Amino acid sequence: PMRFMIGIVFIMQSMFINNSVPSHRLGAANGLSISLTALTRAAAPSFGGSLFAWCISSGSDKIGFPFDYHFVFYAFSLVYLLSIFVAVRMPYAVQKQKND
View 1: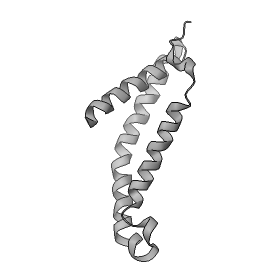
View 2 (view 1 turned 45 degrees about the vertical axis):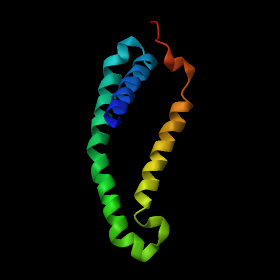
View 3 (view 1 turned 30 degrees about the vertical axis):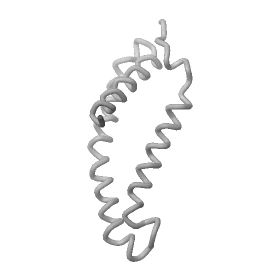
View 4 (view 1 turned 135 degrees about the horizontal axis):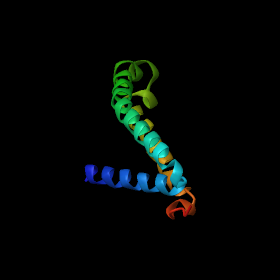
C-alpha cells in the first residue's frame, strides 16, 4: 500500500506542477521538481536515522520525554501535517490545465 500511495502522490505532484506553470516553462519546472525530489529522497533517510540515533543515545537520558525515542516520530508527523495543510490550502486553479 505504501509504494502504491507514493506513486499516486508523485503523479499528482507532477500534475499540479504542470498545471501551475506556463507551457514554455514546463521543462525548467519539471527539472527542478525532479531534482528536489531526488535530493529529499537522498537526505531524508540520513536525517531521520541521525535524529533517531541522537534521540536514543542522548535525548532520553539528559532531556527527557519529548526528546526520547518518540521525538523522531513527532518530527515526521509534523512534516506530514504540514504537507497536508499545504495540500488543502492549494488554490483551485492548480487543478485545471492552463491554456496558453
